[in-house]
Image (cartoon, rainbow, N blue to C red; front, side, top):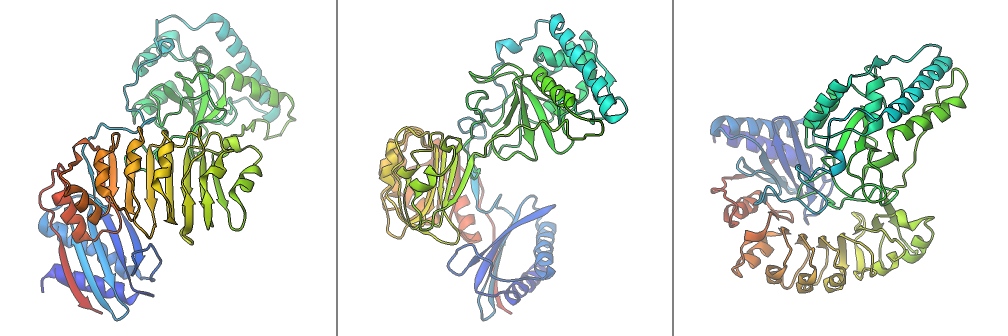
Amino acid sequence: MDEIESVMHELGSAFAAGLTQPGSMQAALWDRGRWSQTYDAAGNRALIGRWSDTVDAGLFALMARVKSREGIQGVFVVELTATRSGDYVVSYSGDLPSLPPRVVFDDGYRYPNHPKPGMRKPLVAVNDGRPTDPAVLAEVQALVTEFVERYTQLRGEPPQLTAGYSEAEILAVEERLGVRLPEDLRALYRTIHDDSGESSLLGRFSPAPLEQVVTWYHEDDPGSYLWDDGLFAYDPVVFETHPYGHVRRLSRNDWWVTFAPDYGGNYAAVDLDPAGLGAYGQLLMFGRDIYGPIVYVAPSVRHRMRTVLAAMRGAAPGDEEWDAGEWSTPGHEWLVDIGDAVLVDKVAAVPDASVIQQAHLRQVEQVRLTDLAGCSHLRSIRALDVRQKAEYVDLSIPPGLPVEHVHIVAKRFDPHRLAATPTLAYVTLAGNTEPVSVAALAGLPNLVRLDLAEAAVADVGSIAAFPALRVLVLNARQWDELLRTGWTPSRLAAAELGGRASVAEAAAWLTAIPGAGHPAVRHRTIRGQH
């Protein structure tokens, strides 16, 4: 027995010792972290045991020894399986890039509303080198003067503000950014900026030095705000900022320029590329406290300054709440437990169903998606519950709803009912007990991602006719059936082996998938008993 096999047996024995029911664990490890998931004997995600640090230590010890001997880099995947009697199986591979295995054929592909850097510059953002508008400058200077006076009255000392920049300094920064900043933001920087970050000149936000603005703009894709642009994102839909029509529905925008933190993990940006109802230079917010679309704050920097001053005028000395001035944005997600109720009644009870963009239905016995007709801005529907699989979901979506994403887990459903919703771009179906036909989905002109890995499908070969498909997730048997028709993934941007594939199955798929460009994937398996 070699050293690696010895470590594998130690790991398998420790895993078996901690089981409360038969099952398995899959783990992906890298130098600074790990991901793992446990499954019951039926392959369902489940908590199947409690383990001491021995298992974690064993996983990393195995990785270290294999990497040392074989010189591999990157992700290391391990699979552990054990029974009540203490029998165990341990498999590993250092050649799999991920678990589940994924292949990206087209690095440049992005989903709709997920633009790549290099967007066309709005004409209004082009810089002609003219100085800041004198009238705007005078107004902003007056607002700053009043702010300093009232701040001093309320807090007993003046704010720590730094002198502003010259026109030449602002122009030099704009050349590095590639834009012209809005006139009121230019005027603000001509007047002051805030090195301390504590003035609350814009409510919770304080304008950072221009050098920091340039750094933020260039340190990642410009205009990024932590949205997942990956092709395997859980929900690729980009939801719309409320109030609707003011901000372009994008995951990022080259022309969103971050300039002010709140030192609580959130940031303000000026929007130089607004939607039809928006205004050039409107104020947006993103960061730690934002879940969903970027938030609309105010139509301009000046508007925000006026709002703050109005609050200060009504405040008393020592009052720390004058700068709150918070804005509210309705939640776009609706998580509803249906139980014995009727979905249409649940929708009717919502004060304003137009704000719902994502509906997650739980405790479903039987449900009709037509009951969501009152949600006029609905873009994503989930009917899934880890505790209770739905018996039947009628997939007929009300005409006119802009639904782009459905993720349905149910014992019965009829996929052809989705064919009447041309806006659908992302479809995941799972959990059915009798095989269904998916051929009708070929009629969806915008269907770019399809996941059937946990569904029973009667005609996997029909997927070859889907005109817009770019990302496909199937299980090992489904991939084999599709590839045996002679179809190749040449038009795909990415593919994934879904379901709960073993390390051996993952290695075989990655080696066999046409166009993946992977050499034979190595893996090793041992068996033993605790």
